[in-house]
Image 1: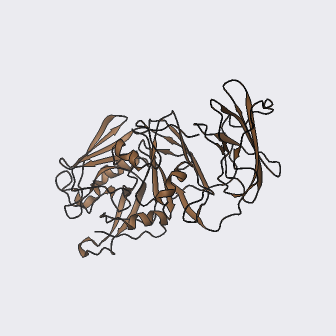
Image 2: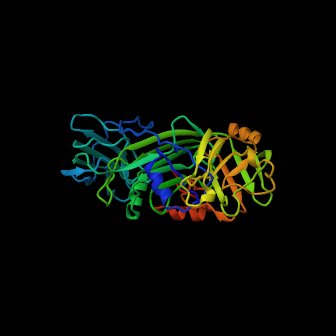
Image 3: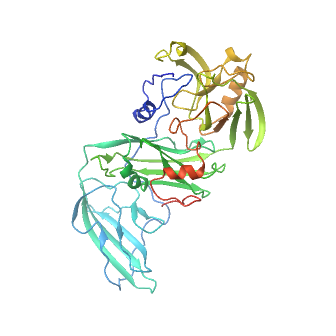
Length: 420
């Protein structure tokens, strides 16, 4: 088993990797970074602000949550009420004691109104909610509440998605938590993780066993040209271990063309598809039997034109080496890459000699490196082991029916639509 040093790597991912017994052919100094987080107010989508001057209520008053006079509410608080049969929310207003209006949006299922940014700590708010019945009568409720002081104990979080970047069709939305989210808290946290796609495509979340990561994907690869808008609204979310979510993270990214790599150990060849058409077939050398490559569908997580694999901390002396590598594309946290291997060109297409990586020639490695994007999928079949869940962005390593069993909330067979 190879061991790898990740100076400056993200602690959440390190916790995950530490739990896996994995072999890989190398590592570099740094993992992909998170997007930044912001608690600043974001502009709401068109139509998210409540209509002004609603009609005078004619029905029974509504009792809101939070209840009137409530103190120490989390800044993740949403506004809700028990609606009369057949009634629907027609407007919600939320104002701070200073008079500032809060923008927000009603959940798709009508269950609650969600502020577009975290509320401020230690601040008094007044909410007014109006609902309209099927007979045209309106009901209204008002509540004033105060948010809690800023907590001292928070949970770290991350989002591997960046604004205005273009990704491959298998790019999952990847969130990370340190320490991991306890199983009993995952449903509450998942309710605060919002994904919207254009054109619309259903999807679902899946948690790795230790709660350090959650992935969001659709039943099939994203459609080329899809825009993905994400808000991980974790700020102020209370957890059972006494911690609170740290900050909200947001990103809007684009999915580019379709580009797939398929590797068959039986033929020791990689077939490359662009927009569904075969564009090249490459000979490869995979991991030898003592250090096999992982079978399954993985995605390109990071690209380094030049790096150094240093495995001198491996407990097996046979697996210790320091090697300069070109055109490296990371597939797993455990150290499996696609990369140039001029030393194995004479056996590529015929024999497996690597420490778990996909070896290709210098010419082919350069060509592939210039073509791929983060999030492009690679499927490897026929090796001695399967990729371990959580060893990389493994959202696609399971069938859809298996994948949705990892959700903390019920998922329809075809996937869920956006919650907001």
